[in-house]
Length: 332
Ligand code: NDP
Image (cartoon, rainbow, N blue to C red; front, side, top):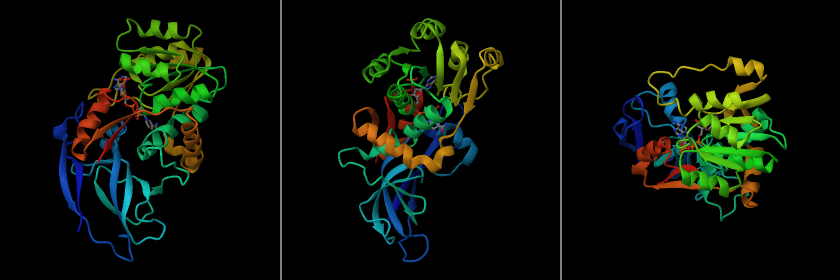
């Protein structure tokens, strides 16, 4: 019998998450059976920590539930011929070291996944965050060659892919992030302009300097004040993809405007919220495109890897504070 370790939400987050909001539990797993649902035993190899866990915990979890999240896992025992022992899959089974599955909720890594490529990228650039950048830019921003694209939280999992895909698409890219090291990284991976939003005297001036003509597309990961300032620098008929609002996730009291209607009207803007799950039926297309660009060296990947399952809460909190460059993952 295998005993899994799992992190549960002890107490709903109030403001910024704390390590005391989590509890480490042990769960005895049943032995596999030939019939029924207990066909596969898996061990998590990499676990993802993502911003959505903060707002979604309130919406979909109750206290005592295992924290939500995805993992790259290895098949340890199999009574399902579709999954060989040793194969790697992406699962959606939360913060646990081991779990049982019938296989229906698992995605095998693409068969073309090269041996040299870290499997953790299936949680980042060649996974849900990369797909968010891909569909958000193509389907929501509808970027066209020659346009100017703005992205915030640009050195993170989604933002760093947004900037690089916009360059592949023939756009000029402006990004901002919360440290000088992150800004240097953005320039290294091809952003045309980048600045540290925490140290500029005026966000308005920094955005104007980076693109005096304004912005055609704004891929917004942050919301709040940044979005309020940026919306006034959109070009006529500009498109805003509302992907995330990380500056608001930890607010106990909702922030108040400025409000968006006036610039929306006079610049005739389109602003659309989206969830990447909308394109679930096209994930294969997106993953193949991302994998190809990564293998060709056209999309560079960076990860902040935290070692040890016991450090999951710390890795999650660190990511919310901006300690990650690229995708934040935990190696079990
Ligand atoms: P990141 O890897 O970008 O990590 C989060 C980053 O957010 C931090 O590193 C930090 O970078 C930045 N940040 C934290 N607090 C603030 C703040 N108050 N103001 C500005 N920046 C802040 O995460 P992801 O790439 O995974 O996610 C980025 C956004 O995309 C999130 O809002 C997330 O919820 C959203 N998302 C939406 C999806 C969808 O389907 N709509 C799917 C996936 C993600 P810095 O040092 O630059 O401040």
